[in-house]
Length: 443
Image (cartoon, one colour):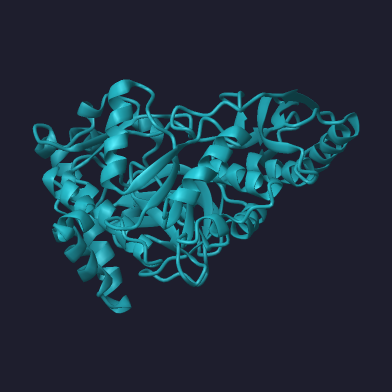
């Protein structure tokens, strides 16, 4: 009976047709390969997955009609735009009549779509997740999770997620209510529950830490069982990480992943953002789809080496980043994640600027007095930006002038900056917050 309770998560996967033990054994065998063997392993899996989808997936055969298996550069780069069609039109023939894992991306990139994974591929995803959390002695079968995620608001979806939370030893906190009143209720739950770790969207967890800072509370003093905090789905800025570590009193672990793929990178115990090389191939490409040398910034393009239900081959995830010069084929290191390719501001002069760059500049000014809880920036026109913010008090004229001046300093002269105070900021249906977005299209 004790074994049943401790392994309820694994059992639930098994009962739903996900062979977790088989996947974990396969993962261990991959990880045991020496560095000298790993390049051959990756090359073999690359060829296998391309060959499979060219044979069995009409959608991919049409997309990759000029592909040459002996020339990786001839394999086309897929974009989210390519996937804007019914999922049944994108599946491989071998999985059209089988039970597969179906889900929908959050839409935080602006291009939501339904995706598919075959059951073995999705089980490997869980094996990777369990492996990475295990680096910090966190076990999905026994470690209690404080979960800061969104939840479907329809009755069926809501109770389905709550049931999954129960199986996964998770307590879900709402990310749609970030008021002090809600955080006060959260604290009572932390006082009475032996949580092992926090996990969830960066922006929501940062807001919780800011509340603790205002109340002069260290979370581990309230909940001594806490071991770590894992943040995901949104950018984690260095000053926010320091705030989390200070107010929680535990290590903060940065995760980078995508629901349609897998964990892409996970902060290891040496404070490196270690890329998942076991089930994914991560490349950094320039605008002409050329592979960039290590240390150079470009588009993050990813191949799922095991998904036979749906091709994700040289898939442009929409993010920009850098692989460290210290990377190896077995242990790539993500040195920097600088934002999304669609988070680009196009200015009247034609100059382009990464939206998160001046979001960060504005952040250093707007949050220095503790008045503003959170904010987002929207580009309305080439010369017009709106800063929407939640605060205890209205921003002063002087503060708004400083922000406008700094934005012009880092961008260019002649910009119009509008400020709108909000009761709360609008989040996506999943609960994620986009720090910067542009209303300008086809520029």
